[in-house]
Length: 88
Ligand SMILES: [Zn+2]
Image (cartoon, rainbow, N blue to C red; front, side):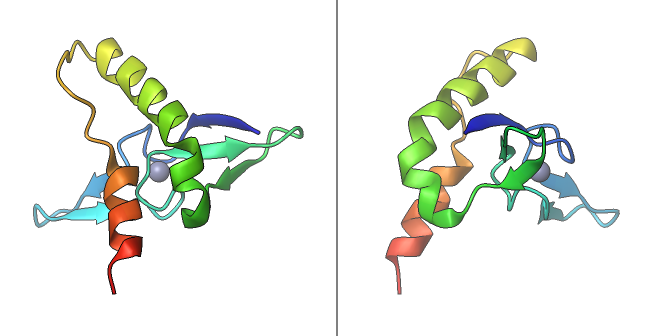
């Protein structure tokens, strides 16, 4: 399955609220990327898949950051989510 930048948050994974707080994007679950199936339909990547697709996500995120002129580390929100799954 192809992975694409989330159409809703454009890869950010979150939105700024009016009051300055951030909110996870509901479309991608805060990951910034979604699956795109053969019919061109975007689907949220299930949390259970994060570990399996993390390398691909990292590559896409580096690409995105490079487009923005950012050369530091990717923030890897999905790794945070994987860690969260392991807790509790
Ligand atoms: Zn999104």
